[in-house]
Image (cartoon, rainbow, N blue to C red; front, side, top):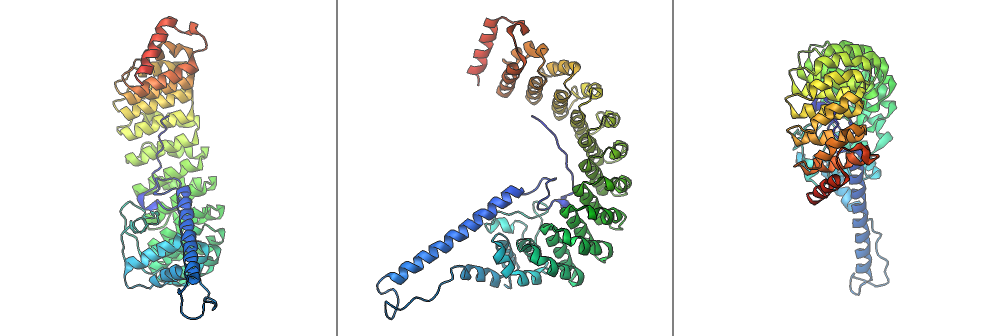
Length: 466
């Protein structure tokens, strides 16, 4: 099934736990990585204890009397202390790797190292963005695939593991630290996602002199997803910094409160393209019918990115009132916008969208035609069935596959003969989809114009070609 989601949030907005973008790692992958790390540590410590016990028991293993009790062993002390010491290394990469490894450890370790990690938050020395992955942690925290990280950034990520005990100290850094430290403190507060942090983050958003700190505070408020964040983020859409306004729009989308619609509607007229694009995304995330008119107007934006995001937003809201705006988007000069509009019409599932999809199913772009085929299968109208039958003869296999799948979803017996013909398609996936669709479409052999023996021959040929 082809479903096209367009979740543009701006490269610098792609952060850990951001489920709207194309994230580096999912939450489940992160948790699996941490569990694997904990298991590895536990196994290492257990092996150390066993080796120490065997060495103590062996003849001549230690000087003095065999009956002298061995000194108490702390198998966790050495590796943990080594990491904490490494936070003070003169080498920035070593400091960052140590913070990264502490972050993939456990809560006890992060809390033991908390003072050292807090002191590192102002450390903005550039290090390779893939450093954590290369050090074996499996984490990728960069905002963009090749963005540099820093020891301070990795310290902020590690502090997340310490949990609520870090909230007070982080608030202190956010008030009095250097600009880089304040930015990373806001980052850590966003990762911890505690509603207790809304007030200090709001203060930073409203009054911090550094735009990067205000932007990170807006991002953090969005991460917390509390309705208390709607008012400060709405106000931040008037911030002089475009970076702050963009992050504020993103935050409102994360909170998903209809109370943010009015401010986001105004943001669709922002002078900066990225802010308008983010506002359109946020309105789609909120899924309020109150945003339809504004998004329909944004279909006429000068920027193709904004128009595509507006079409996505209309699809997310799923209101038939959005069809009129999407009628223009289906004929947009940009294939990306046209494909997004076709997807949105399928999401709305209104028969009023079929005429527009009949245009899209003949588009020059394969992507648009395939998306239109998916959308027609969602609407399930008789006119749509005829268009899908025609798409079974499309020049591109991708479109034919989508059409065959769509006919199976519609379950209209009128498509049975065309699906039988598709059993001879040159593309194996088209044949498989056609066979699946036939199993859903045919209730009786009387639905077919071909004889049972001819159908059997086609089925045998299709199986041999799988």
